[in-house]
Length: 165
Image (tube, rainbow, N blue to C red; front, side, top):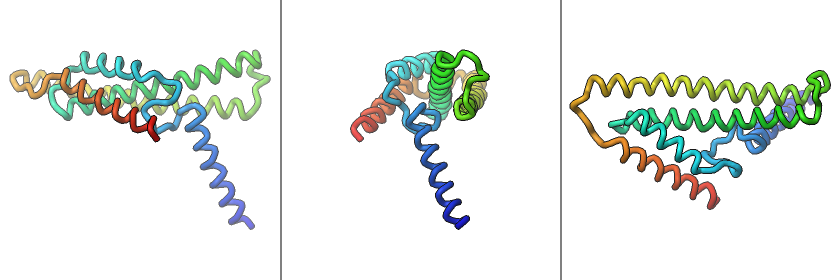
């Protein structure tokens, strides 16, 4: 009997994790959720490519890591703020919150912290672009504008594929 209980417990946990993915996007693997505007992502992408001006494919990947890191952090901050606001409007005092509500808030906070760490690491990695540019000022491969357009097109294709499924 304990083995069956463990199997049910594992299956139940997996179901809860899947629901978390759909519920607030904290663990979503898709680039765009239904309530997100792809134009906001593309604006963020253009801003990052304008700021970093990558000259190589490697630099462009580093910039994309920063863009993804920022995008997922914004998603997780919205989820955290939305849930916190929802519960606070229902129950003004934190002493009135249930254990499940506190658990959910801690979970959303954990997702937000993970996204913050990922963004910080991506920004540290992107510092390489400035260092490499100073070392290789005479060597320019593709202009950053072309890399930006390539990444936009890849993201648009991903959006079309995800909406067609």
